[in-house]
Amino acid sequence: MNNRNIQTYFDCGHSKIRAGVFIDSIQFYEFYSESRFLLNQPNLSDEIHNVITSLEKNSNEYIDNINLMIDSSKMISIGISISKKFDGSTLKQTDVKFLIQEAKQQISKNYKHQYIAHIIINNYKINEVDYTTLPKDPKCFLISLDIIFICLPNDMVLDLKNIFSKFNISINQIICSSYAKSINYKKNLNLTGNIAFIDIGFNKTSIISFHDDRFLSLDILHIGGNHITKDISKILNIENEQSESIKMQIIKNLESKKTVDFSNEKTQKIVLARVEEILELSIKSIKSNSFKSIPFKIFLTGNGSKALKNIHKDEILIFENLEILEETTKSICQSGLELGMGLNKQEVVIVPKKQIKQGFFEKLFHFFS
Image (tube, rainbow, N blue to C red; front, side, top):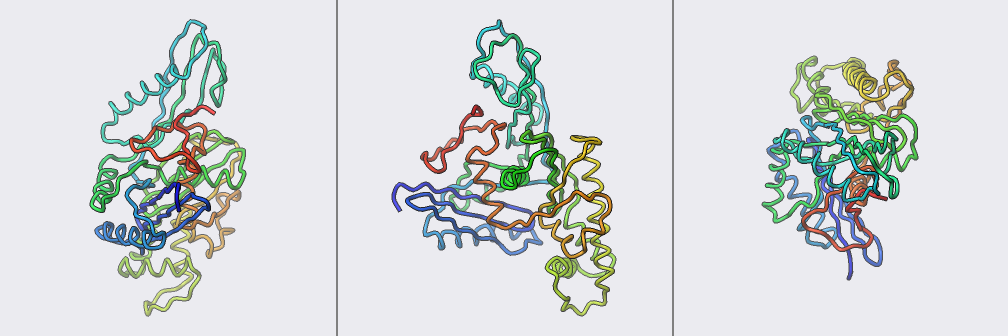
């Protein structure tokens, strides 16, 4: 396969590694691999190596660089407004880029332990008029930008860079997984209006809200699927490994083969109680940060949301306008790919140090459409 472009996306979740290789040549090829369930993080390096080996074998390609998708209970979003006066002349792209860079420097200075993963222009106000995208050649006396920065903890980013470095793999771009997934699902489902995505992960829940194509907010709850496992473990007085197995059996709608004396109905109630708590806290966050009393629709994603499928989500009375989205390794990795190709027009895409050839994977190294 000559003149081919290759991109690899690694989603390093707390409980599982998922990865995909995308090859664009005369034809389009894609290969996927995932790890076992990771109950113990010390196995992370070994599982990453196993996934790399599997992808290289299946794709017959050597992986030397990747795009890394991660989430964290410690990631944050920071909103900032920055403005500047002009003399009424035509506003240039370089003027806007200068303001963005100034805002970025302020965030880097005041949040030294955070890595800036995404820079999102939430609103352009030019001469007291709001725009979702930058108008063409406006005459400007005053411009104000509302910018949202999505940040990940520096130590987490460094740890993962060190792991991949051991395998002679460099990282091109770092992406917030739940943010990338929400952008991709919203596009593929053609969603408009007031939309919120609740991504129930292992140790955290991400809440991301949109109005039409406008990104509004990201919030993090320090509670996730692992808390369900711990609830079952505590109430049934069993080890976490056995508790996780029982939870997964419920999710997969399988009959238990364990000899533990527990009631399936009782276990479902344990799971339901925790999921209801997560939803209640999530809805409170959405109303506080985004929509208040305005009607909105919720989409549940992440492994933790699968617990609802076999506990009859109709029993959850706190919110009726709710859907559960199926997730696969393919859908997760493709979300990273789509975002890397410039799917979100609000986002400022920073040119990586190591650029790739243009073509199918041509990136938008700017934010102007």
